[in-house]
Amino acid sequence: MIRKCAICQKGELSGKTVSRKGQYKSKGGTGSKISRWTMRRFLPNLHKMRILIDGHPRRAYVCAKCIKKGSLQKA
Image (tube, rainbow, N blue to C red; front, side, top):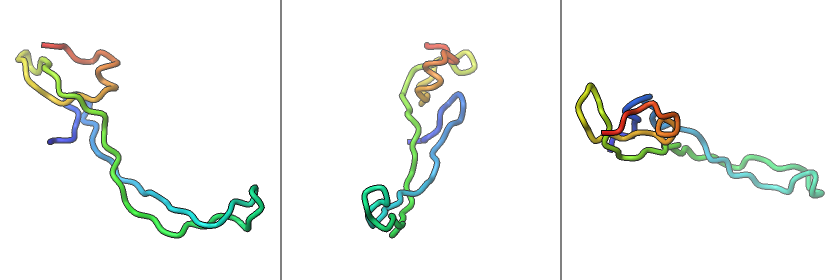
């Protein structure tokens, strides 16, 4: 599956998940430290729809933000 919006070309982003250890200072500890991190993917909220692309009805993946904005024309 192509993870891109057909209208705004919004795609997948990468980031990190951070795991921490230690008790927070506000809870009476010496502070939390980052023990490790791993890469993760942020995927767009895509929906498969029939929309008009160049005047022809096509099935395409559209993000939820474009559907809410109404920047597409349903077939």
